[in-house]
Length: 134
Image (cartoon, rainbow, N blue to C red; front, side, top):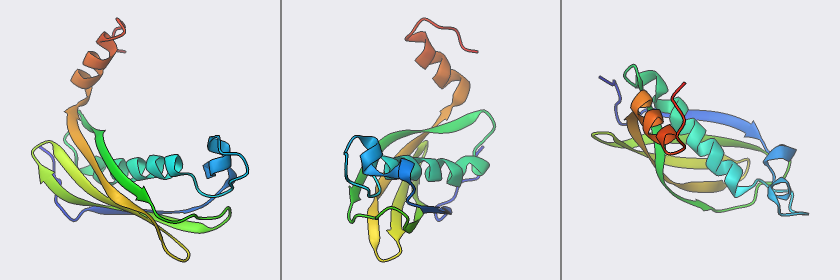
């Protein structure tokens, strides 16, 4: 049984470093924080937020993402990713996700994750490729 409650939150701080920038994601000459990198950080923060509260043998997987990249964050600027668990509907978890740089809100939206039985989930996924679960 999980111990999840709405209101759980998690926050991490970062600096927009070269590997996070749009020009590293195939958009040459645009040294600002890349949308795909913000998505990666948002998903990771949601996982970090709920992992300690999940039942043994379970994990979460992303199922829906609805976000907007609102403002450019230049190379070297600090920013914060914050997530909050807003809704629990059986196995469905809904998070508010937000990133704020040193001057403004730069990324916001919602992310949904589903609680899964990890072994069963991996068994089904690996069966698609005809590979056994390790």
